[in-house]
Image (cartoon, rainbow, N blue to C red):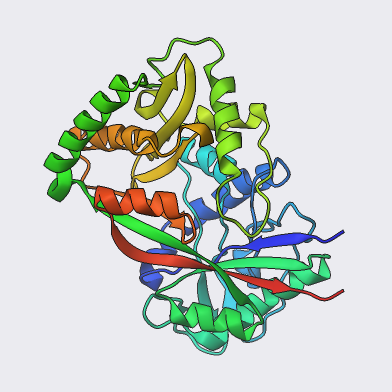
Length: 353
């Protein structure tokens, strides 16, 4: 059976000093949160273990798809920090407990000064070394298809991945919307879209205001149906109702900011922003409409309600991302006034049997 490993790009840090601050707390967070979620359907996908015994903090977090974590024997470099990408369940739990994400800091063993992977001057040979190690570990564990992501404005990262044998597969576009510059227009458009939807027989409301005893089951059905239409290289596996309900009650998804469109008492479209409980950028979580209700402006209408709410809350910017082949959502974002930001490139490496 073909096995897959999803590999997330190495985090970059502004300076060695900023990375060092809070190291012990971050190390504990890795052990406390990531390992607990390795096998519950989450993507805890990157494992790097400190080679310096003084910094071995049980960073041994491996992917749930079968790659056994192991220590790295590195003569030239000493890993002081580990990079770990939290999947949605682990991330929500970490945020609930006030956790932070470890970063990568590399110190050459031969000299006393620290060498960081910093944006603008990434070390290609070092990146190749690290990616090759991660890839070899995955292949030795039985994975035959590996997927990696890198920001499109990180040419060093892309070069390193291509040197290791990864080929470009998909592109994820990232967008930024200035709510201060576009606030007045968006509020007017939200009002007009809501009035039109109501004339067409739709009711726009929030999940919190929708009084239905089985609403999460109905939203789960809508979510599962519409995700089938997202452009993707690999099939999107159906999510269980139990997992959907668990994620729907996460602290970054308040139900009074989760907008839906109802038709004859059934949800046919939805859109929500994800609000970090403490700090962080606000991103669109998901926007969709049922196939038989598309072309009527309903997805745009519910998204506008979430944006109008963000404006009223005083938020300066919101962000979203879409696959470059998702034409309907790209069209909506352009009409709403989103501006492009550097996106992400998905790369694949297929290993022959």
